[in-house]
Image (tube, rainbow, N blue to C red; front, side):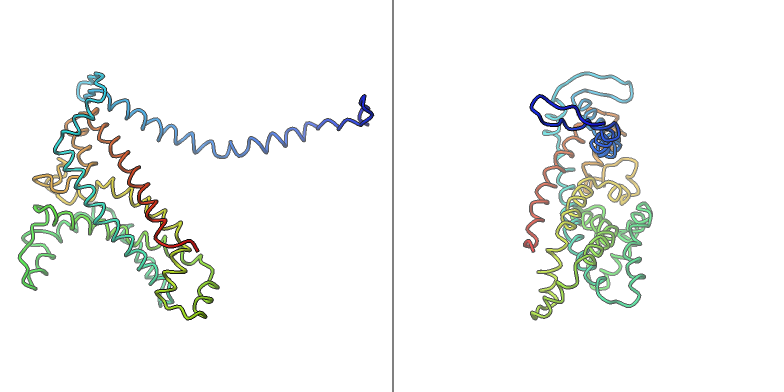
Length: 319
């Protein structure tokens, strides 16, 4: 079939067949259909709970009798005057700083060691992941025994060098160091394997060129390795920030006697924001107040993650 002539003397382009139209439609819609399940699941299990929590935070919402009364920002104003909230916030920031920064630095060093030609590399790499495989409940209970005040192994070792026994649960800084050590022990190996995978993807010719220029091992690590794995460092910083500010299981199980209460010690020495949320929501059944805590925690994580992301970008110059 030939195209009909037009009034200008030019031949009109042939109409696209239904196969061509179907192919164009497929190329336009397929990418949206592929990503749609993620956004659908996120909307149902992520966005909707987030917005509903914001709605609950504006109410005096009691879980026992189901009473609901709109109170606006009253819960948030009460948080600003709540001494226990500020105590939990301070504990959360302290535990985050004590556990996250040393953890990532140690993971980088461990990954650099595992990247070298060690004998039995598969064994050492599997061993680095072992703490993350063990149940967190078992880990916390074992560390609770290690940090026992009267019969703990740590206090026994300190006594051998003349240090008086430390009340690891009763003192604020001691409890923070103990809980931070649990977090570091669990997650250092996990992050190290992530760094190791990134290090092994760095082209070896970069190292060879630097060695020919007389670079030392430290110079190689600082000028070649760090710039090359910078996206991975940014990823672990953001993920560790989210996990560190949502700390719950380790401090909750560190005090076996107060696990059901969620108070984090006799005087709330190591109660985190999530533990305080748990206490208000699931022990005192005040859903509105606990939802307000959840939203403050969300905003805190957002701000700290952005700050850490900005700082982490300056760890190494662009290479």
